Amino acid sequence: MLPPGADAVLVRHGDVGVKSSSVQAGMERRLRDNVGAMLADRGVDGEVEREWGRVVVRTSDPDAAADAAADTFGVVSASPAVSVEPTLDAIRGALAETAREHYEGGTYAVDARRTGDHAFTSHDVNREGGDAVWYAVEDDVAPAVDLDDPDLSFFVEVRDEEAFVFLEKRDGPGGLPLGSQAPLVALVSGGIDSPVAAWTAMKRGSPVVPLYLDLGPYGGPDHLARAEETVRRLAAYAPGRDLDLRVAPAGDAVQRLAEATGRTRMLSYRRFMYRVAERVAEDVGAAGIVTGESLGQKSSQTAANFAAVDRATDLPVHRPLFALDKQEIVARARDIGTYRDSTIDVGCNQLAPRQPLTAAPLESVLADEPDALFEWADAVARDTERAEVVPA
Ligand code: ATP
Ligand code: MG
Image (cartoon, rainbow, N blue to C red; front, side, top):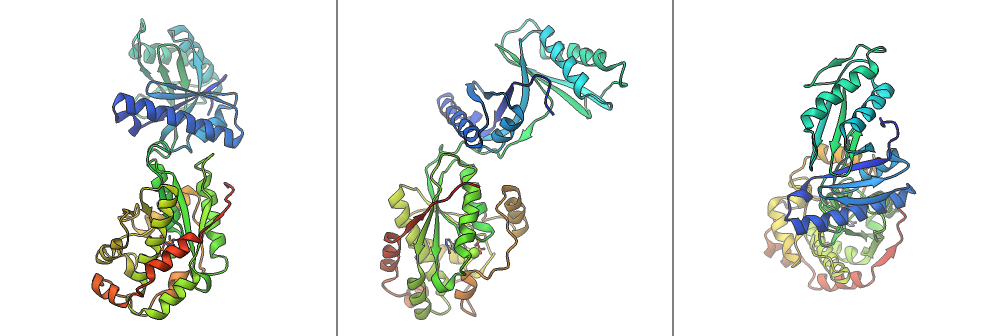
């Protein structure tokens, strides 16, 4: 719901505000730029300004601009608003107009906040603004105030130079502005988990470089297409950034690996995968690896096996879904827009031995593993190619 004459979007951020002032200023500038990029990407008109503790969009399309801001990492909520002079008169006027347009019965409250120097308090705004709403609609509806749980809230935010009146706060993803952390290589398989993991890393500020291992005969023919599709969705959250999928031709190496190994196969496969990711990370200047693994979800994802496979790389392996249940991951995937109900048999199911080890000591993994495994991985990393991704 937009107040009449809405001309702005008030953008709130969360974690950004708990940093030191110089770090906060840098984060806010980044958030301003990222909201601007999101508007541009969607063709929504708007100028983005940074104010202390807030980002404000001046726009002729506050509805679309608020949606764009609410899809930007680092944003806690966004409100399409009308901006007026920071005086009680102007605020009363805007509230009355907004009430005439949107108050159709039920209870209401005026909920004001104020920062800066004014001749009135936020309490004055609540009281006088509440009266203004009442007198504006008393002939048409039976107004009733409920300060605790109103059906309709009229929000007012008064700042030094202006005041904003608005009716809603659209939830954003929260987190930190994208680009405020170092980039990471995200292993993306096209399954349900890995896009959620990549998105979660992005949410906390790390741009990701998505990497897909093409397993040749071990992967389904449309497996790559699925990976591309999910990365297209991720790219929509990162306008102006390179999210092209890196495709590593791993079919031959995995074939040889499968022939050489038995019960420890999946662990060597993971070690191979991390090694390819490490090489790609060196190439693109990434500071770690992100996977969609979750504790205990598969035999290769036990706490003991994580300990064995992580030794394959000097880079940290980040597992944002470590402590999430499958239902929680699925719910997030639906929210993000990467969920696809798929029964396609993915590569790992064909690669997995009949009785995989759930707690393989590193020594037994190494004993079975081809000596040249990491050389294969290095070669596969060198042959990795870029598949252009157009944001969806
Ligand atoms: P997902 O739903 O992400 O496919 P999963 O539960 O099926 O995950 P696995 O197939 O064992 O689990 O893979 C674990 C993780 O390894 C994935 O989340 C992903 O990060 C990575 N991964 C698996 N296969 C590939 C692949 N072909 N290319 C790139 N990364 C992969
Ligand atoms: Mg998978």
